[in-house]
Amino acid sequence: MKVSVALTVYNKAPFLKEVLDSIFAQTFGDYEIVAVDDKSTDDSLQVLRAIQDPRLRIVELAENLGHPGATRTAFEQSRGEYIIRCDADDRSRPERFAKQVAFMDAHPEIGMSGGALQLFGDSDDVWSFPLDNDACQAQVLFGNPVPDCASIIRRSVLVENDVGFRTAWPRVSADWLFMLDVAAVSRFGNIPEVILDYRRGEQNISALSRSMEARRKVVELGLQRLGLEGSPEEVESHLTSIGTIKAKTSEQVHVVHAWLKTMERINATTERSSAEAFRKMKAVIWRRLFFTLEAADRKALWTYIKLSGGLPRDLALYLLKVRISALLGRQ
Image 1 (cartoon, rainbow, N blue to C red):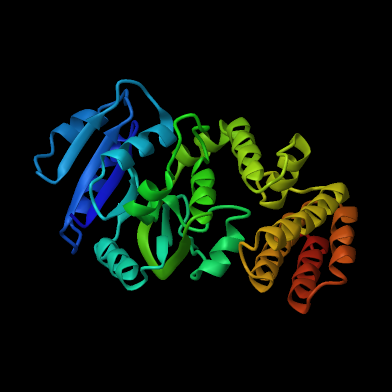
Image 2 (cartoon, one colour):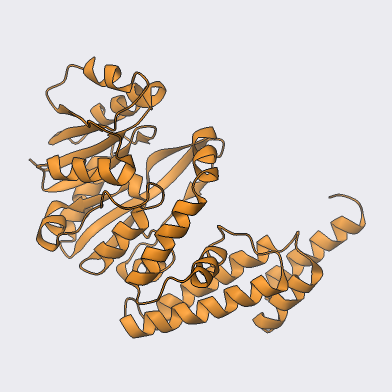
């Protein structure tokens, strides 16, 4: 069998049939679906049982394990050469499986890959990811280089390297730990096309509001994988750098600036990516920080400008327009 679809399900009954319809509508046909119900308390299991298709295998967990445990079970139950991840509230584009399998077949050096996401629901943005391994290895120092919900991985990478989700991991954001482990043994890539419609809504917002302690634990474990202590100060620095904690003060701007230098040293030591790839990643993060400082105090903004050695023309013009609008009472 070429593909196993690892579908993890927890209380997604309203979306589940739509998700499965998008899988059954794939132009690629050589696959099985391993649907792991994580002890749902709604009608998710009944929705799964009502579907009569020999390609669907249902695994019912005796207790709720959360995303890491349910995904690990799906991986262990998979028999395909490739494992394609699906969440139970997103829609796969009809050509998704065909495009991802073709990409992996054409690039045997790549162990895990993904593609772009089209958001729907509360947002219509498109999320893109780095295309080559060098850029992906730079991004994995800060977050996921591949979207977990739209990923494909060689099962051999998991089996031969004992890599996989761990049940003991925090239930939120643990996919970063998984990708850090994959990064140590394999290469990444992404295709530049939208392959998945990613649902954004209240379920995302409510999950994030409950997740900060779990996210801190994930960052602690991730930084330890990178050779750092994972101290509370390092965790806060990392979360501020990636924007999970919004920088609002001059002190926080200094924190981000110093943390980027720390991660640059980590990259140079581990040789995960080239210096040029890291420089580009660092520039993206530093530029993103600028746009979070619009509502911050003036001292924070001037600290950013000083540490930047001035502003590039486009950011200077943007700032000027914002200030003029504020003076004219348009904000």
